[in-house]
Length: 393
Image 1 (spheres, rainbow, N blue to C red):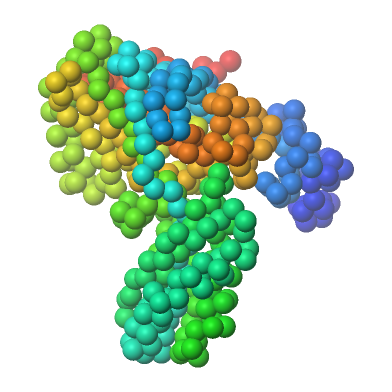
Image 2: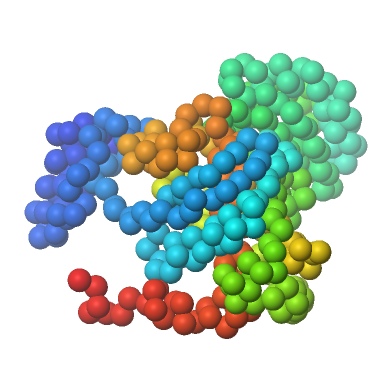
């Protein structure tokens, strides 16, 4: 057998999985752990091609996270899949601070997934006329979008002109799915109907279904301002005594660190003033079957830290959080179990999951703020997170 294609690579039934495994073993490669306890081939159909086995990622349990949101209410045990030592301990500590402060509050401010096609016209006047036509024909565009989905609904049509180019950001409510595939199909149908019904369609020189203006899998300022996915905030008031007892620091010291940090973030050109939202989101996404690549957009974190009458107010806002509780990898066995731990398995739980995700980010930021302010950060990583060669058993 000379290549992967020769191993009947595109199928996922058991015989084809075994054939693919033999293909590597015949090369003298050891895949004992990849083969062990793999999912039945049919269960991953639609999630992966050329299925071979499973990559195991350790899952730790943090919490409980006490949260009072519009959708997530109560205490939640948080499964985090990571290979970074000290991460679960750090998030666990932040969740303890939140609990001892009476819990955090959370709210979802917007919920829509975007796709932004580009139309290039043969004149500036043609681009202007098309922009006007879009505004005047919104109901027809909404009807076009409904042809491909029962769950998606067109909610926004924003136009951005750049010379002869017209970028159209279509926003959709996608229910409990993250929604990129749903939005792809619906947007394409809208564009097909536009080219059929727009009187000046012959003036369109070129068309691109997905310009980079929707910034899929990329950080962008437009997504911070306009949102893509869900915009969510979680906040907590930490009493000074809890800050001193659990984080060994004070509101004044934390605020001084944040002031210096905000200045240095601007100087360095950082995309936000948060610390490490990507850590908690990646661990939660992997555990719960959400696309880890969406961390590229979701990790933008606007952190509000200030002294309060009680001690310290901390709020984390994720303006472009892309999550779902149906579709994608959410139905795979271990991922479904992790969503079940959170009480977020299946339909009706996407907004609840979004609030939990933001509460987790808040906990991680609080813990790292404390570790830096108390000068304990390096020691914690040395004790828990440094796996030197030869130390692993």
